Image (cartoon, rainbow, N blue to C red; front, side):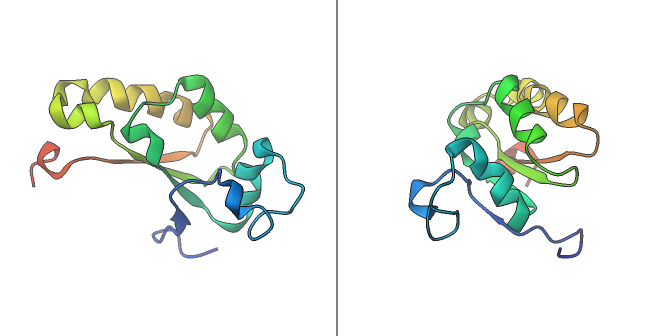
Length: 116
């Protein structure tokens, strides 16, 4: 595994065209994330930009990945236009992550939200 300050992964893990090339031919959709986590230790949650995942999904994802696996979550597009929703976004994703004990979540935010 690379040093802990370098995270290498992709933007998502559930891609049908990866079956046979990256995943085994007979893999079930529910087994893609654990198989992905055997090769990479981080993934970008791209869908969170359009719609925040529910806590049940986040808990399922965290249960299928190793303790040190990192989820990089794009901040919701609504935060860009309504920064007051930022705390809700963090709470909705962070609580299930922390409940797994060492899980990390990186939240990608628009530059103007963090003062750049």
